[in-house]
Length: 254
Image (cartoon, rainbow, N blue to C red):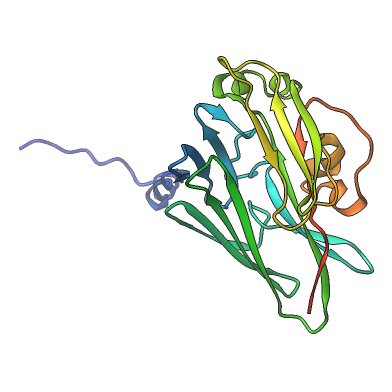
């Protein structure tokens, strides 16, 4: 009969026996529309990438650990200004992904929120819809800030050098009689035979804007804090990273 030699049982082998296999990586959830616009969403609700016709909208790919620069912030005005991110790893929310729609729900300081990302079918456009409900005892004055990093370039060009691509984006603020301020952004480097562009604004009323990442984030965001502009307002600065920051008009919720 063949002889089978068993290895001695040691403390190390006991630890290995108790170890569980690593969980499989979480795959991004894909949203697609008939217009050709696609969005890859992380499990925490942050945007991994958004593309149309080979053109990458966002400058940096979001991930599960850090999310990405793109986010929506709910800001509360009072004796002190406070804010929270509605998507990403720092959000106190639950994420659900359905066909063509991402739904995020949660509650912050007595304010219940429901946020959804919807891709338009007839045009390459995306919409963030938000519903708020005040569960507290006092009225709250709130507004929203949408932060979006922009590349508007071929995927390979963005991944080769994000800052080089970003410095060629030109931003033009425009005033709409009903929607307030909107920002038109154009990639001035030819991508094939075209110059990709986009317009970002609010279906409510936009009241201000910023187009520079350092102006919005400051330096405290490197330590995991909220962007400085949300709490302190925008300051003059300049860097090579394009980012849009269009706050909405404040509203009171009883």
